[in-house]
Length: 282
Image 1 (cartoon, helix red, strand yellow):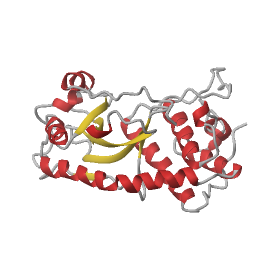
Image 2: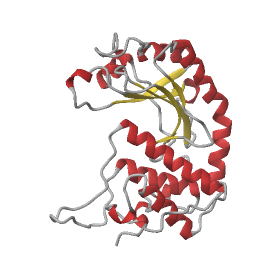
Image 3: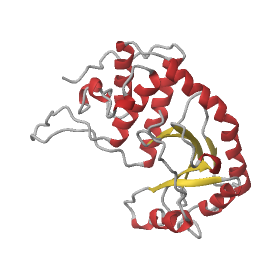
């Protein structure tokens, strides 16, 4: 577990954040939004979160198709408590902030987990932590910042849930069912996926080998989000098929939370019942 003893988290400065996601620092909303839209800049929220010792450690900005949205598009920031910046634990709870300044989404606060061994950035859903959303109408900075304290309160509960995932040993069929259900988070059917469930379950490093639920979920998450997996199958044009990396903020959050919900169901003893037409790709 402690093969990551040299790990040091790095806080992102305003300069780095501005370079990677300029939309965080928009001085106003995108032109044409409703007059009822209440503009609360993400930069202001960040200042308030820093006062509560939340430190930004990762950021990304949504790609745009319309030039008018440039500088106002959706962005995601992962923050960690200062006290956890240099801990040697395998994982840390993070605060995941999602917002935009083009009326494209509400303010969202999610719970996240950063796992150092594989640099996985999970997003939690289901019973462990419900996302907190604020509409851009009467939204106040203080309300958003204070809501982050709910995550601090939930940290022990999240730790207990991960412990349950570790203790839950999966039978081979359960592991396969998890991988099948995970593929369905990205593809219409398992047969249309470029890889088999067995391939999704393969470990990329010795630390990920094992039959408990926590390891299986992390293997599936890394495969679905980072991509790069292939069964050497080719499409009709002879092009090699592989899992492509997920790049959209919404798709990453959705797949992450879907995986977490699947894990919670297995931890609770609920079977994963899949559609009858799900077939395993050859």
